[in-house]
Image (tube, rainbow, N blue to C red):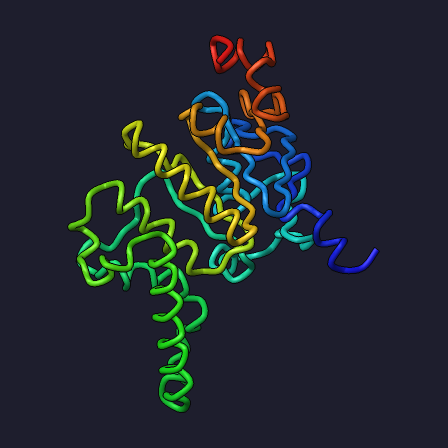
Length: 263
């Protein structure tokens, strides 16, 4: 099997038997999850199931006591949080982290800040190199805004945008990092039914154009069932079920613990 074939088979993100503990409380117990190349994997479960804790472990915001998490076959143990974006992991959060007084373009450019390096010495001794990187970053951010349909809003103050467009801008900022995998933490929160549908089309289009792997945490079951190729269910910090949307909708354990009724 050649290298390209191995990359197609190997999950982009693979967690095995991961446990996270806060003091005497176990937030996750031996959970496993994988995200394949080019797929949208949903992670669902009741509040307190450990979904966001898993994202925090996968992005090194919290340490895991046991188990392993691999990104493209590379272990993440010992990797600093600040280095995750450079490794190809981009994430959005439940609460928008926008810089309201900055322009939309400037906010999106922040997604590629790791490429600039922040090296003061380079700015002094290699100013042409730094300016070239800044120009490249601006061009990439502009292209991403065109991709998400916001090119005409590049010069607007981010804080002046309506909430759905701020959500879209946050996706654009994540894409500016050119990630291998995109982690979305309840991205449809606060959106109306029509806005959720548009958002789903946006995410699916991005996945298809970029062959991007996406891990989606979401409580909006209509979005999860229509968008995801595969769904993993957590309950009380443990794996409960895994399968296609159709399999999850008819899984008795999932219905009892979370869905409440067959959808």
